[in-house]
Length: 422
Image: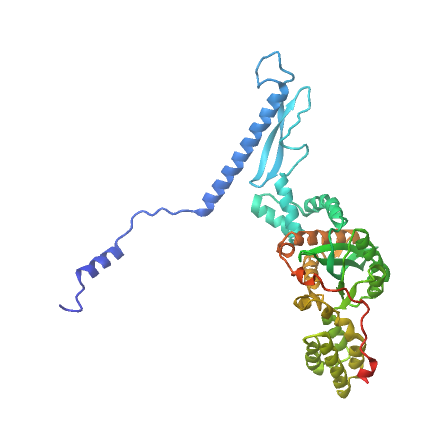
């Protein structure tokens, strides 16, 4: 058979390839979706209006046009009222009565939005969606545009709940507590000023993280920290064995005043940055590796011995300023060695709280300058409360059983013998 001559099968395939398919039905998904949306809105609207009519008949004691001695009132027409629902905006025909005021258990008086819609608006705001962006989202989801002022008014409703959450008693003991502050901008007398929000999180007896306190501070000074620690103490914060923080002004002295039996761990990362201020840029990488070697040791004594060697090496490198910072401050970063080795990674820095602070900064960046300190406090508190309900608060962070039976040692930091650095 000639290879150039197509077989019957090949010919049949070719014929079917060029055979017209006839009429083809084109489906416009956009039109179908729009039609379905309108059907859903119409169904919701008809159902709600039927329920309102039923309520009016019940209050009148008779159906429309029904003559009965039990009738209490007569219908007097209706008025239109718009209501935002998850299905979209519907028009309600609210009945009027001649004698009695019409009371509906379905739709509250002056209510313009379904409760679930209000909750969704607030949740979007707290989840990190800017007020302006919420306006566009509501238009896309429900076909109606909710103004930014409306969202702001809704958020004022949760202020009372936020205050209750912020001041609720602290239950149980928290062995580890992380403390830090965040600076935000506020408008004050026509000028933009700084306002600090102080935050504390802790690890409870079951190993879960909790937000322990949120409070406005005029600035991160001793007076602000004293007020914050008094706030935590009065609400029941107890069982603290280690505080982790940066070396904030006045904080360390305040910790001793309120929790004298607790140790204080200085964040190792902040300590590194402090050392780098006395190191030339060309030598930062080398010094960083040296400092990390201290906190990579197997126990406290080995870390101290390593610190002595590093101080000597820094002096050989003609970095006397850096050597002095390490000699006087390294012991403050070694307090985590007094606790189970399985916890060291989470205790030597303030990173657990720093990551939370980055989330707050991301959310507040869209706001810019707050009108006052209280509005900043409410938004930060609301965002933290939202985070607590996510995987952050539901995932076990540590195995606290390893802490059981560990003796409580003196909280006073043991100073490395000064002669060792000579």
